[in-house]
Amino acid sequence: MKKLVSVLVCLMALPIAFAYWSHDVTELSLVQKDSAWNEVGPGKGVVTFTAITKHGVTIQERVRVSVWNLAPKTKYQLIYYGDETHNDVWNYATCIGRPQRTSTHGYFKGSSWNYDFSGFLNDDVPQKLWVVPATDVDCDAGRMIAWNPSGYLFEHATI
Image (tube, rainbow, N blue to C red):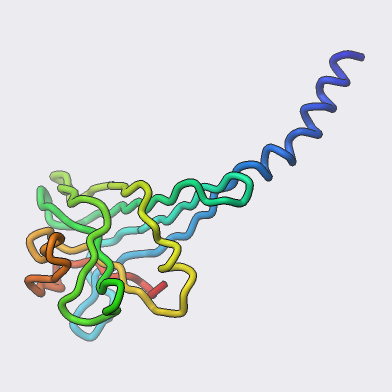
């Protein structure tokens, strides 16, 4: 009887535990594009936005990027093409996280903890997220300093 009561108490507590913590996940595909914005090339990637909430309050936001089939042993940077006041305007860029170096096979995975991306997902502005060689962006100045799109990954669709 004690075991049955223990099992019932645990089963009753499960919905409470799920309401206590939650993870909201949004994914954005990245692809290589040509000058006419058609998908080309082997380079691919995904950006994952995760919000962790406790009692309905966001306690942590994370952006994770994974890419493959890019130039090997090259540093790449995830950027938002724009800044707080200039969306989709050359040469504004906001760096997300730190540059990551690809492996000998052109792969990397990186994360940025506590990056507030709620504005990206909750407004009506179509933001563009790209992975570019770190040499093409000056993160401190918030500017693109070169344009070499054949080596970039672009969002499959804006968010």
